[in-house]
Image (tube, rainbow, N blue to C red):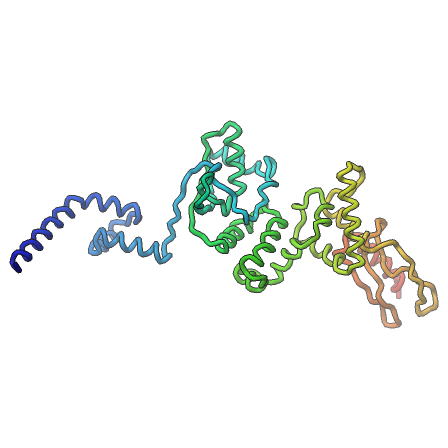
Length: 363
């Protein structure tokens, strides 16, 4: 019995060696699809590992994350749905906002940069969910409907959690000028509770940014809807404008005045009224002026016993430029409204007038 088993084992080894010899070329081709070709010298040094061993090493590298291998496919954009938490306002996309991308795809004859997607299940109408690339999705869909039916949507397929999808989407779009600060801000505000339990410090760390940086975006996202409606295109608002709006919305009495003015502007614009402020700076000036309320005269006595007017110096449109807080024998204390909506040139004129009043030339 023992001899028969030994003979059977020897016959099995012979058959295995014969099969390996016949399929050597096939296995090498299979391995080449996983492992890139090596220079002759390096390849010779690795022959001792064996074809299957080399393939196993490659697969181990992929599994460990040392090598990244994300498959790419050309698909029908209609089979891709936009992730409900995508940071792009897909409904706001149009031909004008995507014109540069449309022209690039037409010139190249294809989409050069793949969108990042993940597979979906249980949805008979869609195979993928778009994590990054909503604008590319819109542009390809538009081209397919306008005389370019053969252009397909290039996607890179990944396996991602929602939090990973959020961070990848943010990282890809952070440097893109075509994504507005408002879109990014709203995405951050939504993610704060969804993924980080409202912990701003934790979220800033995951995004590798400072808390102050993140706070400015969150402040922009928290602006009241009434204020946003005062602007013809809210997407033109930047985080730099938060410095003007936040101070006039914090005191309750000023907030009520600002909201009333914002609603008035939105209503008049909807009615087609003429002569309304259009640009973001002009609208900001109107809101700041509304926050100041009706111009009043604050009567008082300076150290010489003369009557003093309202300590706030304003432009002709009522925008505050500076305020004289205190004056005594040692000097004058002044607050500059650097973000009040006025211009530097207007502030310089006001400062020169103040100097001429309190520090005449030749003194």
